Image (cartoon, rainbow, N blue to C red; front, side, top):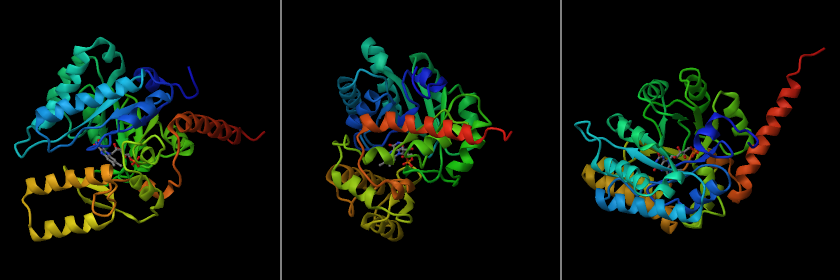
Length: 344
Ligand SMILES: Cc1cc2nc3c(=O)[nH]c(=O)nc-3n(C[C@H](O)[C@H](O)[C@H](O)COP(=O)(O)O)c2cc1C
């Protein structure tokens, strides 16, 4: 038992209710391993939606094995679920889900660590039996209370309620974290995780006050000393960002929050002029995201990041950061309990 242990930490087998979420299409192996080693839950990110399914699944498995070699603690894998025009789950999403299930089935030592599958974007209802039978804890990310209810009804174990201010793919109908999370926590009975705008002990304490069992963060974990998989210019750009520097642009499967730059101008221009067909634009976006993450091209690449960038001012070390924000949140909650004492 540690500070802030609860039913979420128990279910996931972690110390602190703090999650690093998937941030594809590039890799988050070192961040994930560092977050898990620090007592939170790290997440392996998906390698991209435009990959050949077999090659993508192989790459995902390599990332899973790499994280398992860097930590002995539990971790998650994120699979965004895309659908085609006939509403069929995209072959690449299906291949990723099957790769995660197979990784667990093929290696009992790995299965002890690879505990969680986080799905996002669309809901993989047809794969629920496969996921449930595999023994994976299934977390699903939603941006609307109706989707949280549907996920719970389908048997999902944890709902991640992510508000519109989040970085990366956000939601078609904007509901912000402060409104969404209490709506979701009063609707479902499974544990709820707040995502979108969290960055410190105060936001973790606020999540708990709203009825959530923990926080999940993306943007904050980019600006860390441990993020050596990504080019440092990406984190530097997040640290430099102020309020209003972000925008919502058409992403790979819906709107995505990014920092406004030359790539966003170029994307908008390509869409206006119909220069490329849909498949070509999707490929361009996937490559532009990876370019920013891997080469630090912060103007010509797409810079997925949340509004919380404006509140991030430094690089932190994950081993210190994760326990510290749990302790800060606990201290805040204790102080607040003090000021809420009845006046004699
Ligand atoms: C660079 C970046 C890439 C992302 N890629 C993914 C992804 O592949 N799958 C996914 O479900 N969410 C993705 N997201 C969203 C995050 O998982 C998370 O929901 C979000 O960052 C939370 O909001 P925050 O940025 O305010 O912490 C991405 C976010 C960022 C910043």
